[in-house]
Image (cartoon, helix red, strand yellow):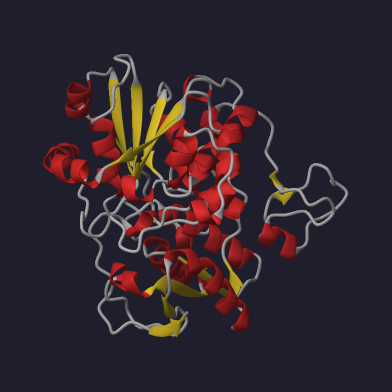
Length: 395
């Protein structure tokens, strides 16, 4: 098995296992790059018998792992109800709730755990407010890798009643959201685990959604999603960049797109920075409430991601805040739209899709807009019954 990453500035060097795991060349300090084949028709990039993220094997840096393939891709549903309410040309809902644990975090977890397995990393860890830890646990079990999850104590219920598995321990941290990353990385180092995942590895799983959009709705000009730290659109831009280099007849969404990104008003660091023209934010600028409206969207990542978002996202991209009362007030409308599309979401488990759809319903849009909405989760999900494995770590 191989990881198809190299450093274009140091092509005479073969990256070590540690460099591949960190996604960094030690020779020059630059991020590694995926080695792409020669340009070809898009159809040659598609493995139609596979699900995401494995459907586009030349666009991801890891070898195919059948055990990590759920055999499904996102459903793409045109929503006449949304088109009518918004008064726009097209709205497609990209249903990313069909994977293993019901959120698009499964795409990231499948790629990262495949990389861990192929690099021979036996003991790893991850921190999250719930969905990411659950996704990594799910695919780690299937990859034969031991992955510890570090989760804020207040978010443990998002894991459901997970089945006890000493190979996949869950540690609850009694800490503020802003402290989670540092404490989790410290605990992982003390226990001899490699903490996942570096910035660029996190983007890999999201990158394949660019190819899915290109394949199914290539005339899209506006991509809509709820964001926390911005990893979603940054991942899509990685995918679009690769497509530009590899597709011999690029068209549609490759040349004309922008993002319309939404955040809950109580945790809108990126929106505040974007609308105020800030190029960077510090720890003191983070808006991380103690009792957030949507815990999944608590993130310290804007400190690192804002400069890259400024650099990589296309012109015309907007970030907007959505008030909780607007989400609650528009919930019946969103439920109707989702039901019409055959998408079942668990509002109590995660409100992300409701936030983006409510924000979109209140937006003023060009009548000619052609919109793709990333429905990022979560579908109803019941973990296997069992007492779970949870060890409390104080802050």
